[in-house]
Image 1 (spheres, rainbow, N blue to C red):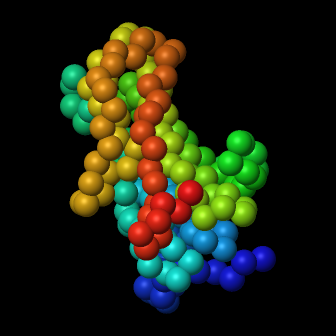
Image 2 (image 1 turned 180 degrees about the vertical axis):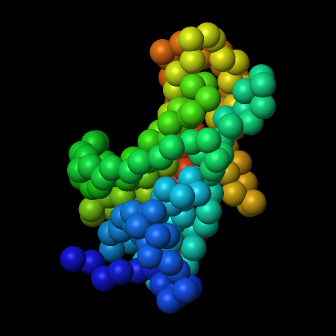
Length: 177
């Protein structure tokens, strides 16, 4: 088992037991990621504890306003699965965010590879209403330092809008993939 690589501030004693139970971390020897069920925000760190981002959210801009994984009216659950793709094997943290308004559900996927210094972020925005939704943009990772914006699209009932953007993690002056 890899040594825990959470920054010391994350381990502070004042962190309540309820908060500990509200998140589920995933880590490998390169990175750690966490999705907080209570807040709908997710964070990632390098193995040395340096934050890649903290308390990010996935968002969707609809014709009626902005929805995000941190909205109060989302119920959330997490599952961790094994996966294998062309890049290798690893573990994937999947955060399911269910909209109490029955408009738009989110699925945020944070993937860590066993033998690659790579981290992927995917967001699926799913129309769960009975009518078409106009989705102007989906941002897989929104922090104070940047945004990801795919093209506008109308999502029909039962359809999905997946973010098609890639996030590359840079190590020094080299892409970490």
